[in-house]
Amino acid sequence: MSTMVATTLQRCRRLYRRIWRRVGPRQYPVPDLSREAVGPLEAFYAYRGLPCLIQCRLADCRWFGPTGIAYGRDSLHPYVQSLRQYLGGECRSYRGSCLETYWQHWQPSTLAASLGVSSDTAHPWLRRVPPLSDFMPWSDVRQLQLLRTLAELSSQGEGAESLQVSETAVRQVGPKPDWFGERRLNQLVALHRAILQEGYRYRASQRLEYFHQHIVIDTLARGDEVRFLVANGQHRASVLSVLGYASVPALVHVSHRRGPSLVRREDCLSWPSVRQGIFTANQALEIFDRVFEGRPPPGFPRLARAGEATPAPGELEMTPCAQVIPEDSPTERH
Image (cartoon, rainbow, N blue to C red; front, top):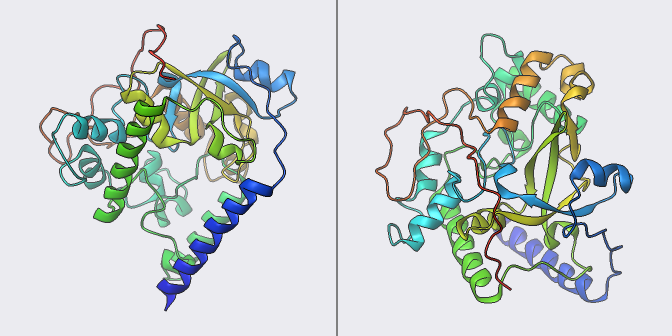
């Protein structure tokens, strides 16, 4: 019965979105700075924090979360490597893919472990709760409230099931069911085929939500340097990495429930989790710097590559996840 209700609700949501795209009001067009040499910080001050479209290097982008995995031509992202396996004939399904290997080997049991914080120094809440999808030291206060609620349930002997936390909610950690992995791989393959045939969509209907128009990124600022977390568009960033794109237009300064769209390192003491004592300033800055530099957390497994043998459990990746990518322009497909 519950499955039937969920299916009906999903169909109703799809119908509503289709109708809205046809008759709903158009969103205010965002400033397109993708053909200009404008960075995210310049755009932020020039347009008072409004969403803007800028040109973004894929090698400067990270998978959303604490893994530090970078995109780009030499990316070790399991989405990227699994798609390369499929295209090279190494695998025809999720089973045996780099993505399956990743989810089999990276299964931290606590939020502290997924963030790379030592259990000896981690806050008790971080040691009690399982990994969370959007929780970072600079996350929104709503993420902090969720952490508090889960920690209280855990102390009372109740599990995350009380809040109906899905096993597929946190994509950065395993394990995952086979059907979920198959869906991820199928989406990557279908998107790769579409971009090859039609080219990458640089323009979209303004009736679409921002998240469906372009890749959406959050900016990490350390002095004059910036890196990006892909808040939306993980599959597109992965496929473009496989296709050899060096950069892509991306939306910055888009508000969402995860937290701020611009995170400055110097504002560390103002981050909600630091102010509440969940992280020390040093712990928070270590996570920021590690993601910024593309370094994986302690205990992170060696990432499998297409064309290589599957690594044994416990093998560690000895090189950073981020790779240095040349600045030459990609071969664009229109």
